[in-house]
Image (tube, rainbow, N blue to C red; front, side):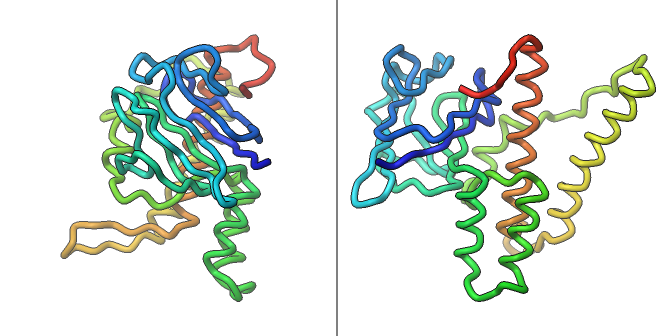
Length: 225
């Protein structure tokens, strides 16, 4: 039996974590699914994850609004650790930290003192989790990024100010590392990021989603599904 871990990055259920679910897994807004999401744009039974020839296969169950994997519309697709699934207004990331760590290492075999080790260290530093390179990045990212930065909160205590500063320093450090390593292709109007840097940004987004969920549910002892 194969297992799969999913994390909700965006949508009404953002911050929820579904760890090591046994396949097959169905996702939809109706009770009776393995994962029930609170999203009116998701069909009652939207998609299914199952194992075939030792691979996880995602199948859109003729949903009304369709399913995307890494920004591309799909009907059936092989799903890998770190892929991103978009359904309705919800965005899911696939894989546990150790799964993603192994995938990054596998992309750079024989480089124990090079990129593979650096990737693993970064993923550990940022408590690693997420996804693969997305071809249609704007389509996935645009609803997640606010157009204007919200105002800084007022009347914070010294301890709250220090805690907020620590959090913002962490966010800034993750983004700085990624942007410093980015490769600009002016002719193609593209910016390329290293795989591990992209993972770090997605991990940051996942952790912020969990924090936001915790803030919205202060009495909850866990944000796991």
